[in-house]
Amino acid sequence: MAGALKQQQLVRHVYAALQAASCPLVEGLYLQEADSMLQLLCTPSQHRTDILAWICSSINPNFANSKTIAMGFKGPDVLTKEMAVLGQELMLCKADDLDLIKGDASPYSQLQFLEQLLTLIPGCKESAVHRADQEMLLNELFAAENLPHFTQMLKPTLDPWPAHIKALHMANKSSYKPSREGAADVASLLQLTQSTLEQLQSECEFLSSEAQSPGVLSPSSLRVAACDLQVLMATFSHVFETDLRSYCSRDPPSFSTETDVFQRIHQLLLAFITELEMLKEVSEASVSMNEDVNQLQTQPCYWSRGDKRNLPDQLEELTRRIRDFSSLLHS
Image (cartoon, rainbow, N blue to C red; front, side, top):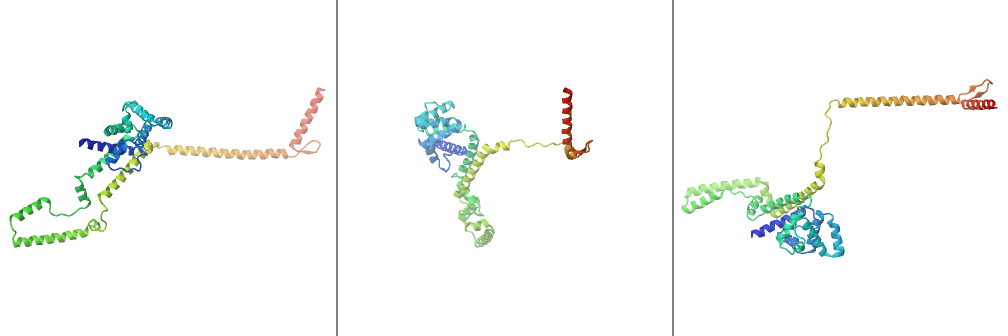
């Protein structure tokens, strides 16, 4: 009996680890019973082989290529041997333990092998522990010995007579017959208690609304809500481990605490404004010089003979004279 209970806990732990690792082959199954999980993980089937191959590929990415070659050219037996060899390299089994790979070994041995393999997937071990703790809490909450207390918590009743007072009252009732005066006092006390309880019940909204909407807080609906919350927490934990942890663990940006930072910025701005003014003056001087050069080029000049010529014509005439003078010297 203890071995069967331990096996049920182990199969739930392995199934929760597969869900925490985001295995696509168990998504959408929503298995709740340990027998159905055991049927999936420990019975020879193509689905079980695909799950085991996915685990091996997650541990060793190079195994995916060899898996494709084995399935495409050599058949599933080669795939089984490849997974057994990988188990031997990880020191989890022997290369000839093909029954463990095919699903023909004992369920407990298969579950132990799968559990050890899943702990080698990056980021799977911590998520599986959290998910197993949540599943253990749910199992403890819905255990047979705790179910009456849980039902009492969901549907509370107001009982003014504790158990020991009830037992004392029954003992006294059986031992003697109350008198007429005592019976009248008890009747008046009970009537007063009844009226008080009715007044309290009218003031309690959850007691009055229970008759209108029965079953809103039933154990089954609360279990579904708890399972949904568990799936959301596992999904967020996986996303946090894969995408958000690196951003959350970064160091915050450091800012300068010096008191003269604004003074240095002001000095840099003044220097920048000075450079802009210098560039403006250089641009104005360049425009003025350009205008002067254009004016000199177009201004007429009077030669000794009295004719008007501009600067280019004068330069050309001067060049021609120098050339004539040079030719005379050479001759």
